[in-house]
Every structure is written in C-alpha cells, then in structure tokens.
Image (cartoon, rainbow, N blue to C red; front, side):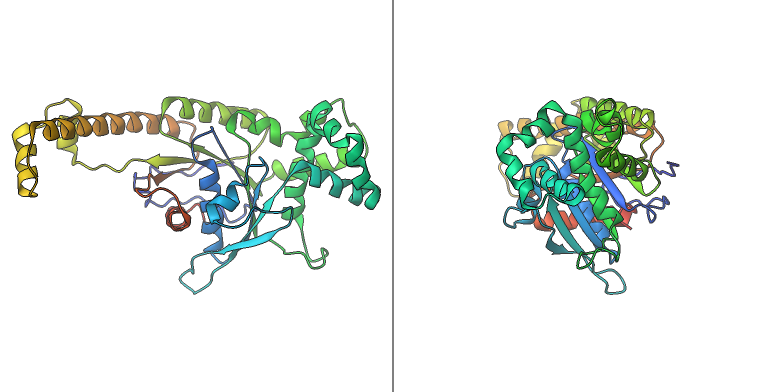
Length: 349
C-alpha cells in the first residue's frame, strides 16, 4: 500500500494526506499491552463520526468491547452499541459490535454450507469443535475471518441484515497477525478443495486487496517498536496490505525544550523549583524539591526515548499517527476523545 505520511506531534493533532476512503476492512493489531483494543474501538467511533455505519468485531474471546463501551457481554449477534460524534454536516453514524467465537461460527458455517440445521448442534457432543480448533487450528482462523469477510461483503441480497460502510477488526497480536490473516497458508495440505477452501480463497482475495488495511499499534518503547517493524516485514512477505502505525500512550511534553534538556541532565535549578513551590503556596521542603527534580528527570528521559523510537517507527515509510496518554484513563468519554483525535489526524475520515 502506498504511503503518504507526515510526522505527527505528540498531541495527535497533525493531519496527513493519506486517503483511507477506499478501505472497508480496518484490521487493528499490536503487541500485548499496547492498547490495540482501545485503538480499534476509537477507530470505529472515528469512522462513525463521519456518518458511516460501522461494525466493530473481536475474535479473542475477552469481551473487551463490552467493557470499553460499558454494555452487557456481547452475544454472537451484531449489536448496536454507540453513535459517532456528529460531523460538520450534523451526520452521526452508528457503531455495531460482534463478539465472534469459533464454536458459533462453526455451527453457522455447517448450517450454511452443509444444510445441517439442528443436526449441526448435535455435533457439539461429538467433539467437532475440538477437532476444528485443536487438530486443525487453521480451520479455526478460517471460521473467524470468514465471519468478518461476510460482514464486509454483505449487500442488499442479505435480507434484513445491516449493510456496513466499514468493518473494524480487533485482531490477534502482532506476533500472530500474518498467520491469522493468511488463512490459505494455514489450510495448505488440509483442505485443497471444497467449500471451506473456496471460502478461504475468497477471504484472501479481500485481505490482499486495497479494500483492507492492517494497522499496527505500538508504544514508543524498544520491544513494541521492534515487534511492529518485524510485523510489517511479515505482512509484506505474506502480501498483506500494511495500513498505518498508531503510536499509543504518547506522553505530553510538560516542559519547554531548554528546561527539558536541563531536566534530562539533572541540572534544573533547585532554587527556582523551590521558589515556584512557594509562589504556589506550598512549603518548599527539600524532600518535595528532590521528588520534583527526580520526576522531571524521568519525564525528560522518557521523552528522549520516545523521540528516538519515533524515528524508528517512521523508517518503514507508512503513515504514522499518535494518541496521547489520557490523564484519567480510558472510559467511554476517553474513547470519544481518542476518536476525535484520530479523525482530526485523518485516519478516521
């Protein structure tokens, strides 16, 4: 996928000129602990804030969407959970959610392709799910991705079903994303013909097309950045389209550049810090001054690390975006705040 990226500020307000309008499936991955699920949810809200009808899917069985949006645990049914922010024309789309579990997906698949109906449920007693997820793990990924594929390809022929402008997939972590999406490779030697192979071929046609973008979430730390760069290489090797990198939990720069350099060197003026405390009506006790100096140094060193990691993040040449660390953590209001930042930067337009 061609990249048109610019360097973004830590406040996440710089825009870029990459056109995401042709993307229908946004796959969001990232190393564990980077906040990929939060970014996926914020992206879904950002897309809905442009008037789109969006489906947010999860496949890892943690009910993370329900917790983030403060709703009941999601069934295997598409459920409307939120509205996007109104755009400049007063339009606000909707976010629907779907928790995809392999057992329900398998039973649906059997009913669809083999017309088993109620007989399909009886197979649960005979270990068919254990076979599909243990003996043949590639089949599990075909079932999960196949449900996402159906939501993207849905049209007016699907009577009564919601047609989505965009689908956001909260996908497995970066270390498994290429394997998860490369369902044809997983089925090599297992299913060379038949309905399940045909479905895998159709899924791969979508996944390798410009209608799909795989976004990678990272922290500006060494291990997540390294895994992100390695993940991009694996996606390229599998001929899967890399979308954007989202640097999450970026710290704001609390000090001007000159004081930041002094703080990093441990050279801040103690007397000036003490005077500032006194001006604020606080007792400038030596222990408090020492604590503030230590905190300032840690902050400055952290920003230096983030700056060096940001340079590495930009080396692959894909669009990059930044989301800040929210002071009060991420609740539903925080998701809307992050969604607005993504939209302002251009990812959710």
